Every structure is written in structure tokens, then in C-alpha cells.
Image (tube, rainbow, N blue to C red):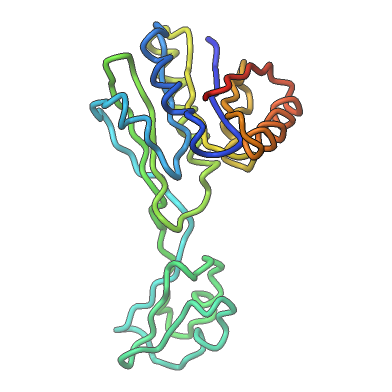
Amino acid sequence: MKQIAIISGKGGTGKTTITAALSSIFKDTVFADCDVDAPDLHLLLKPEIKKTSEFPGGKFAHIDSDKCSRCGLCLSKCRYSAIDFLNNNFHVDSFLCEGCGLCSRLCPVDAIKMIQASAGEWYVSRSRFGDMVHAKLYPGQENSGKLITMVRHQAKLLAEESGGKYILIDGPPGTGCPVISTITGTDHVILITEPTVSGIADFKRTWELAEHFKIPVSCIINK
């Protein structure tokens, strides 16, 4: 089984369009959309979702107003300004809460619990060209690298079950953690670039990243 990742140093170079074009000629292939922050391969392949699963994120604090004694200890100790006092109740802003759990440990009446957040969803689908695994990360959530790893793992399981010869990966742009999670352990990288000054500069950085992981690289200049 060969894993081929299609990436670029910047957005808008045509990664997804080229992935969709290749999907029509690749046989015995599982497709994986690893651009979990802005997935769009499904818009072209139009797959039918067969399975939806939740991707767990971090934890955040929740205050039980019935138990709360309104002592204000949590508000005074929170270093992330995630707790407010409104309408005679303390409230936690889940976007500001870092999930450290300090307020939960300090609460004298055990009114604060740490709740598991849902950071996104991942899907197993069926397109007219073959099975597909894709996902979306909810706005403001982190750990896109972990979600990409989950997508790739599920794609590999599907390929092993169906006897697939290839996993074709539509990757995210850039050179950060999501791209590293996308190309790690792949057999080949296809770099998409455009003949512009910014396109060439970003292309060089992405090429160096693939070279660092000793992955063979091919290039497509998409005009």
C-alpha cells in the first residue's frame, strides 16, 4: 500500500482540484481529506456519509449554580480570565478556559466539574471513486494534528480491509503541525505550486520540510 500526500506551501494553488482529478484515474484507492480546518474535497467528490464519529477535545470547567456558594475563589484564581460573574451566577467561557482544572480543585463546595469538550467530527464516506475519510474541526478548537492522525489511521484501516493499493491524501497548506501530521510516514509527496513570487517562496519551504523527513517529492506547477 502506497500513501501519497498532496500539499502546498500556500492556499489556493489547486491541491483539492488536482486530488479530485487524480481520484478519477486512481483505482483501488482510499481518499483522505486531511485539511480538517477547511475541508472541501467532499464538495467535489460528493460522498455519501456512512459513519460519523466525534473527535474529543480538551476539558473545560462547568459551574453548577445550584451548588455554588458564590465565594468568588474561582474568579480570583483563574489566570485566563475565563470566569465571569453575571446575574448573580459565575459562568465559564469555554473558549478562554484552558482546562487546567485549578478552579475545580480549589472549589470548597465541589461545584465545579471538568467536562470533556467535543472538538470536531470525522466521517467515513463512500464516493463514486471509492471510500473516503474526512473530518472537520470546530471553530476555535485545537489539536488539528491529532485529528489528521485519526483520519489517516481510519483511511489505512479501510485500505487494509478492502485491499486498497493507494491512500491519496489531500493535505492542508503551509509547513506547520497539520502538514507534518499529513506527510509523516507517507511514500511520496506531490507539491502543488504556482509561478508567482510568493508561490515559489512557500514552495521552497515545503520542499525543505519534505526533504527533512526524507520523502520523495514531485512538483506540479498549476497555472
